[in-house]
Length: 442
Figure (cartoon, rainbow, N blue to C red):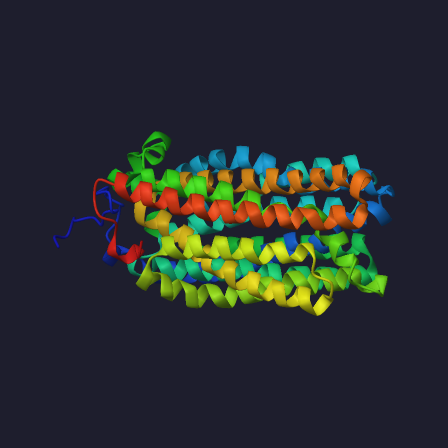
């Protein structure tokens, strides 16, 4: 390879600086700091999730079941609505001013907003702060774009897999610790602790992460051709359009029961003062298993392809969600959550690798922003739809049945999403003008 040759994406688009010219120390240092910061961020955001619906009931005075169902549906979904609108804008800004500033913005803004949630005095205050969370955070997308932009192609799968593991690990620790802190010291104290974790993540990125020669400014000075690709060029890629469709379908179906999960778990717990801890344990088990499974599944995907694992994982997750409609014991629920974690581990590692293989490095900010937008739309409308379904079913079927039926709906939707994923992946593969990167596995 000549000295000025550049690496290319599977569609033949130059990606900027060649891998051998990438600063390996920049990659390693940035990967470690972003990984640690992402764990802190996910702990901070997931810290408050096990008790959010109880926070409405016990601290904000929403006592009626149907009113709480409506409020929790909107409050759970609120961040995703504005995140879906803001993520592409932050992504385009990242490709201009750098990915590190976007991670710092997301971490520090998240810290302030979560702190303020602990001072909310009404459901309206909490709803407004959740909207602000969606508009100004987005740590997962910002961190993934930062890591992808500095990762050599031969280590991109490892880097993005490690970031996916950070998401699972942070969620596992956050849901467990958040429930315990809330039970011990109250929900308002838990918000303060959560904000501190986000602050710590922002400080670590500020001090240790760097972009080196992969900073957009450096790429423009070097005349990197990939830096001239705009939003329209990214959206012309058929595989990328497939990724957007998959994220929207999967997150809508998987998020359907989220707004009612806390009160659903309450059905199984005799000692009500331990409900938050139990919710945290159930969610934590799911994330831990998913994190471990994602490492093994990432290696398997390199052999059988990412597409088959996405399809199989989504269908399996749906099939395992349906029994939560009639499960009667807490150990049985724990067993289901373990197997659902395995299914989630099959899905996660593929998406970042798809983006890295099909989108020029200089456009990673735009690409990850658009994927975050689609993902957020799914997470917005999924919990909202499930929460509204719960509220509508309370009167004719009773509160217990209304808490169980959204799981059946979620399972059916996930199975349909898996079938849709199979169709979209097959169609996008036929639409590609050239064979995919051998490293992509699918």
